[in-house]
Image 1: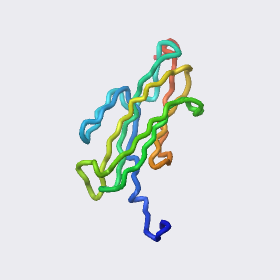
Image 2 (image 1 turned 30 degrees about the vertical axis):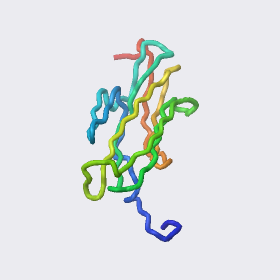
Image 3 (image 1 turned 45 degrees about the vertical axis):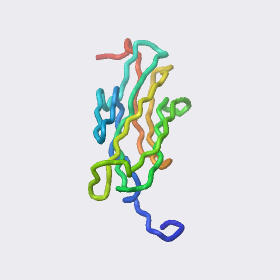
Image 4 (image 1 turned 30 degrees about the horizontal axis):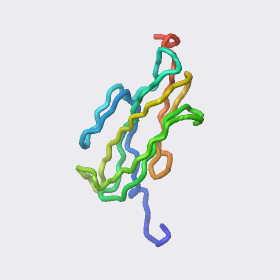
Length: 146
């Protein structure tokens, strides 16, 4: 129960349905298009190097629900560097409700400067709560075996 005595349930909170990393992703209407989706390794010719990736997915929320914050952080695995992107998702702008819910697809283009090989991660937060970690490794192309 909240401070006023209303029942609060997890059913009323937005939740991450799915998420993935992609070389490219785009939202058109209520549809998500991705290229090179769900990768777990990137091979670059040399370092440091620029890398642009996309974090994409779908959030399930209550139809007509209140807007909520979404934050995506992408960087090295120890959290010492990275890029943070923030937005607000609004269930009232969604189309095609089902069973009192709506699906909100999203994508975030993330430009990074990769200084070293190793493990990196993307973190997705909804309402300031960490809901998913997506890991990927960065290798130098000449060090990648077939």
